[in-house]
Length: 635
Image (tube, rainbow, N blue to C red):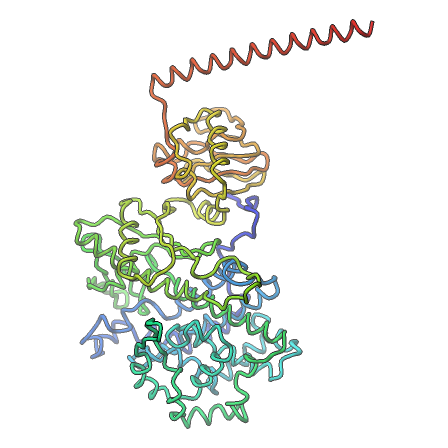
């Protein structure tokens, strides 16, 4: 099915973007083999058999954590492009095409290196992996990779930095420092309030570059201690905040940095605090790229594609609600191990999680039916646990400094205005509501609205994209009542419909002539009501096609019957339509006439037609009389 004739009045969403344009296959392979391949190799079952840490505590071992190897790097690189397209002008100030392309190139490069510190899978390596990536980038270890990025002009970033006249440092060194900011993918390493403040950000990444990581690891618990402010608000400190760290400079790091700086304390990351306007714009683009990276990392693939770094599949047992790990040894053995791990179970049941074009966080689940109330509650609790972790990264990433009083912000939605949308689950309509309650009860600090929305799990990818890209309906009550009256004239029974509920989660879309709106044989997901334009219905079974005009609902047969669609609908003239999810239609729109009501409708229709005929005859007689009078006067 072609979708190039669809439009909703805004930029089309890119659903299958390639990041190869921003980072060559050669460099991708270089990074994958140098770093991520080590992660995948070290988590193979053949090696785990002889790993005491795994044998002692399998659930605490990185091999059973969600994938952070080669596939993860590729996944985040793809996801960050989606995030940037969705949030541009919505959750951060709009960028023109050139600046957005710069941010995409930079974000893809960040995505590819952000987890290279995890090639050390020990407890130390996991805790310090974000800090490690900064130290690796700012060391000779990264020289050849940086040279390749520079020589290939990856993402056009080297060229842009070279042409930036306000840059007072070597552009190649600035690029190295930009990539070292991959440490910011971790909210525990660099909290969002630091990301919002270039002065604090510079101080933090400078410390990250020179502090002995083993000292930092030993003091991590101390620096993360909880403190109460004078207002009684609990605030967590973070490791790089303490001045005590200045006593723990690493001689090795100092020697390494001396290869690039005469005085790192005065020259390192100096561009972050440059007052020149064009450099400040660079800093804004870099900061918002880091926000997109944090969000994309939180939205990594889960559900049916969830695997560990060792390529072991993780899925939910429908009887127990626990996570099942499918451990493979080469191609010879498959061992299914069930473990009571809430995070893995919650992630495995998460069918999708994304930022919508409206700047909200939308999540769906694979299943909501479990054999007993206890298992159902545990599954909902697991889902809430994972969602809290995701929203903590995805939503918090877009917190920013508000403009001065009197100045209008140049983005549409603040982080605290983002909604958390939980899709209904087809096999249990109550599951999403249960997750909602669990999320609000277990994590009362969440201030964002959480609400249940219609399921999109059974709709085609194209219709899902059209719906998510559609505009929210912003009609007042009068407009809704007027619409129901016009729909009623097409034969639909609308008197019992409550307009406050019927139009909730309904989207407004536009489609150009030639676009196939509904395709025969597909599963139904929406009912459409054209407001303008002309459409052609082509039924199955050899029956003749026919045209319909505005205000007649389309696609209701498949939705009501709960089966495949029995006709194709094509846009003949450009049309504007309401798009109603089937959950909303069945609950608030679906009304039928009983026999006595139908008889009454026929009587009313005969009376209406008789009145219209009488009025038409009267008008014709009046016109004839008026014309005769006019002719007589002329004579």
